Amino acid sequence: MTTLPETTDRKLGLVIDLDICVGCHACVVSCKEWNTGGYGAPLSDQQPYGDEPVGTFLNRVHTFEVKPENGPARVVHFPKSCLHCEDAPCVTVCPTGASFKRSDDGIVLVNESSCIGCGLCAWACPYGAREMDGAEKVMKKCTLCVDRIYNENIPEEDRVPSCVRTCPAKARHFGDLNDPQSDVSMMVADRGGFDLMPEQGTKPVNKYLPPRPKQEDLDEPVNLASLAEPKATGFLGWLDDALTRIG
Amino acid sequence: MHPAASVIFFTVFSGAGFGLLILMGFATGSNATPSTAFLVVHFGLAFAMAVAGLVSSTFHLGHPERAWRALTQWRSSWLSREGVLAVLTLAVAGLYALLWVFFDKPIGLLGWISAVLALVTVYATGMIYAQIKAVQLWNRTLTPICYLLFSLAGGGLLFLMLHALFFGSAGSLLSSVAMVLLVVAWAVKIFWWISGDRIVPLSTTESATGLGKIGKTRLFEQPHTGSNYLMNEMGHHIARKHATKLRWISVGLGAVLPIILILIALPAPADALWLVLAVISHMAGMLTERWLFFAEAKHAVMTFYT
Figure 1 (cartoon, rainbow over the protein chains, first blue to last red):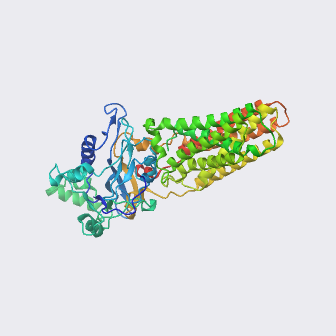
Figure 2 (figure 1 turned 90 degrees about the vertical axis):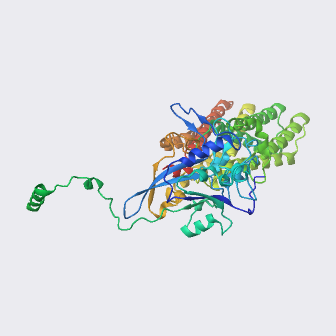
Figure 3 (figure 1 turned 90 degrees about the horizontal axis):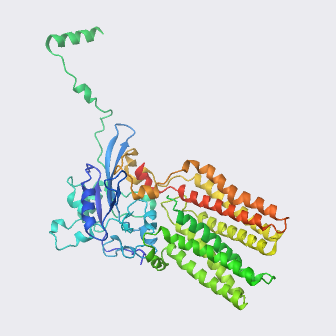
């Protein structure tokens, strides 16, 4: 049934640290690698070696420039995948019941054998978390690697989503956001984790940690080129100083 | 939003078909005793348009063979409700038409029920779009009202044309009703456009990324060098620059020209041809309006791409 559960026992989700992400896209690659062979239909590419390659991805890294009122602009790498919302609009619009949110752990999934590929759930999601696969014509989305996190056939340290396992900078964390004592919940409380587009009323489970504040006294970018200029010493140095003083 | 031809055709044609069914639902109330041919053509056209539209809507599905599954989630999904209501409407109206055409038993109550069902079906079609919060242009009370009014206007014009084809003249009463329906529908639509232009975006790149607390945010690098499903589906902006011109064209073809043609046909007996032209012009205007409905709509996800 495509109604949402009133509450879920756990709220499994990701916490993404925007201060740490270096934008290497390793999570994008490992997500595609794991999920093209795991749960459901593969994540196909169309014309991967052609003029206009397109493909299905469950996780993508955008890069933004933020310009504070005072001080230099900074670059923030921004990984984005399904936020497993509590009020997931993608679930209730589904006409077939293929889209659902699990009541035990809150994961939003698609039953691909019931999906008619109408695309309405992708329209309903404000985050762009769902992509229709170009070959299989069913809706694909992040499963939170549901085939890893409960998988007793793989070593325990691997029982986290593929993106979390692979992140070389440890910018991605996985856990139960319903448990205030969990690492992820404490991280969110400590760092002021926030929701994306809270105004859309979707109540995302995934949280983002803001970039830490930069040095306040750094008003203007340092002119690095000037530091590299050769400095005259000895007689030439004296001449340079003298001539500069004359004007 | 991407304007899929199949969905444009579906909403326009099934809307007009259901509109004609709504009017036929009340037809037992008139004193005139229509001929069998009259009934067959009226119901035939209404069913043909509604069914053609519904069939066309399955063309944009990734898996049309599973379309029946869309009838299961009517408790939560507007798209499912629309499907269920459409089937119910066609069943009840079919029974109503069957009893009238073949057994000469027009059952007024059945007609009323089919008319109400057809109205609710068209409302549900509008709600498929109006429910989407991520598309603010659509997410308004007026959106399903526009769908309803256009359905009635299209149905009224079709009814008028068929009436003239059968009786040589449309009659001033029916002509007036058709013109009023057209004027009301397009007036509300124009208001929908004007109020839509004034919408302040609910989500911005700052709120989407949460980086607004630091400062002005803009996309520095896309996640990939090529395009993707989201950009193709949600980021459609071809010919958005022609939107104003296309709005004029849709009003001209959808309302102004049909009204002029109705006025020409009014004093000219046996000139149903004018009304056939009026219907063609109206449908062309409606297709333009519906294309704009999708092409002009902006989706919140695009804040991640600007």
